[in-house]
Amino acid sequence: MIQNKKDLIIYLQRDMSFYYKTPIKERIINRITADPIYYIAKYIRLLRLEEYYYNARHDFIGKLVYLYYLRKKNRLGNKLGFKIPHNTIGAGLTIYHHGEIIVNENAKIGENCQFHGGNCIGNNGISDKSPIIGDGLDLGIGAKIIGDIKLGNNIRVGANAVVNKSFDNANKVLVGVPAHEIK
Image 1 (cartoon, helix red, strand yellow):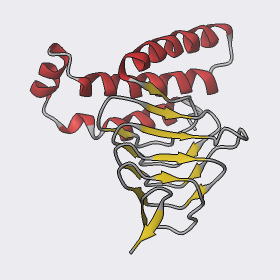
Image 2 (image 1 turned 90 degrees about the horizontal axis):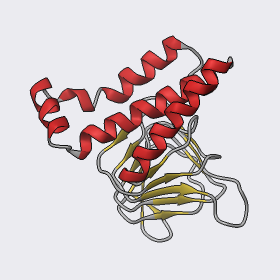
Image 3 (image 1 turned 90 degrees about the vertical axis):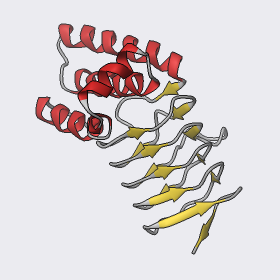
């Protein structure tokens, strides 16, 4: 969770490390040509600024700036298909593709999380409890994690898998509907 300016800088550096691997010339071309990767990086930047102003700035101006970044993030998120609330994902967030990424506001996801698109992390519709996930999550295209479950560190979820039970051990690969571990 971003608590101060130093945390904000660390989160932004870790989040943007994937997006800034490309040369500056290519990033400029991505911006000019409205490439989705430019807008995905912008969305993550807005998410982190929103978190900073929500957590660290409790004065009147801080609340106004928080609302400003929340609005900008939500408008861009509507175009990209993203809904990621503040304080749900640790540093090192990487999103590879635009299109439908939904995270419940009660979910807690560790650091170095990777989304490939078409993902949902949320409650099961019966209770408001959402997943608690360790570091190093890698969600394949169309993968869903649903319900009051816990996942350990370094979990990879295959494409279109639906995880609805806990896997507390680290370094697992989950596939299928409902998801099961492969060896």
